[in-house]
Amino acid sequence: MRSVRFAFRRCAPWCALSLVLMSGGLAGQVKDTDPRAGKDPRSGADPRAGTDPTAAAKDPYENLSGPELWDALLEAGDESRLGQAFHDEGWQLLGYIDSRCEGWLALKEGGALDTEEGRKQAADMQAAGRRLAALADQVLGDTRYVAYVNAFYGWNDEQQKSFREGQRLFREGATLYRQAKSPQEAANSISPLQQSLGRARELDDTWGQSMALALIGRVQADNRNFAESSTTMKEAVRVGRAIRDLDAVWNGLAVLYENAIAEQAYEPAHEALQDQFLLAQSLHDTKTAEQIVKQLVELDKAFDKN
Image (tube, rainbow, N blue to C red; front, top):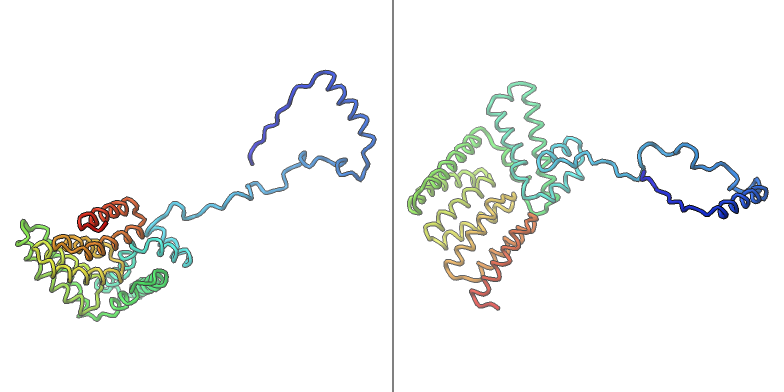
């Protein structure tokens, strides 16, 4: 309750005397039925509860964000709020959903399915993955998480081994790229990356495809194979959007822009920047969005589009 201060003015002596006289005269004129004759309610105890009823209830999740918030909402069964959180942070969900797939596979590979407890743990993880994927597809509207997790959970033993081999090949290609001292040397990474991509396509491993495509397209651009790189990156962006692979989509658009500038092609350069601007807005990244607007202005000047 907020305290209220009352200000009193000093009265002259004659004023105080007249007030006393008036109050004495009025007392006899007040009838019993006059509500003013009753007890002043302010003199009693506050009939309300100890807490201020106008105060908003404290949000139990106010200090949580990202995976911590999602875990808490999932455990509480608050799918309405979880769906809103997924909608607001849709580009951050891939690793969170995929952890249920990788966790399930790790349990299976570790022999956990040989025990009743392990089988229950694996089943719970699989159920959570399907539930999260379905909710994400529902609130985002343009993703294919359900197809991604269903494919993952449907692999047999041989396919799971192929998946692990595809991951190993991708790491090999990425290492060769990072350690390369020239674009020509970086081209050595193409072979293992393409092998990784092939396995990912056979398994319908969406994330495996988007990662491999994005890195292959980067290597191609570094070696000035711009047309080939643009074809690869368009596919990386398309596949990446299906599961909101932010790295693949953002880097794909960046390389598409660079390729277009290298070939003096205004339309694809403008389109790539526009797509990056929309992506920055969906990420609530106003600083990056402002920088892209400046790039668009400079692009128009360079091509005399004003």
